[in-house]
Amino acid sequence: MFRHKTCRNIKKRLQTMHDNNNIKFMQFALEEAQKAYRIGEVPVGAVIAKNDQVIAAAYNLREQSNDPTAHAEILALRQAAQKLGGWRLSGAKLYVSIEPCPMCAGAMVLARISALIYGADDPKWGAAGSIFNIVQNNKLNHRIEVISGVLAGSSRKLIKNFFAEKRG
Ligand SMILES: [Zn+2]
Image 1 (cartoon, rainbow, N blue to C red):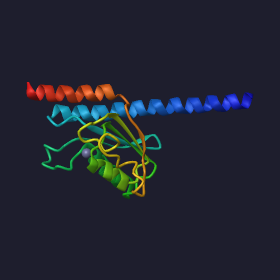
Image 2: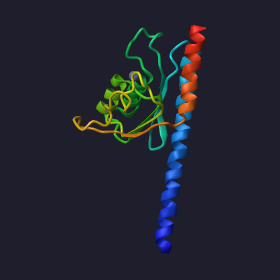
Image 3: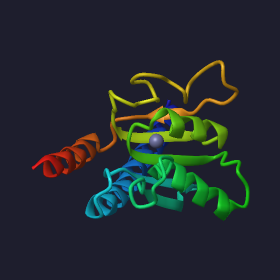
Image 4: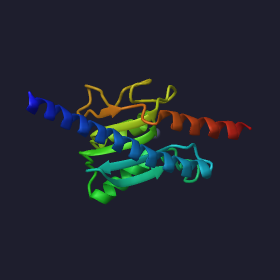
């Protein structure tokens, strides 16, 4: 009985640690998104962590680099692969402020990312469940664990402000 309870407590503690990390890394992703905001890019930020260490951080650079593929997640995946010296990012977790688009979701599957943690849902482009679910598709040979809604309010607010300012 006692042992069982201890086990449960440890499990609970581990879960809390997990949640704290998710929030911590999402805050970091949101800071990246702020950098995009400041230079007039749609504010999306991404962070990749492995063994609880940040190995890549990037933000959307589509306008600045005249590159339709320069999404935060793609740039972060490239950085992480460079850093680890290989394209296979098994065991790595990707944190992004908004649900990834089909291109980024596809790239995450190709990179064998283990977990995707994102903030706000994207009803227009989301490919982690909103309009497609590329990251958890049985027809593909790799599936990614997904946690959504982490600091979603902050992400939504950032994007809303960005477009309001643009229109104003
Ligand atoms: Zn994308």
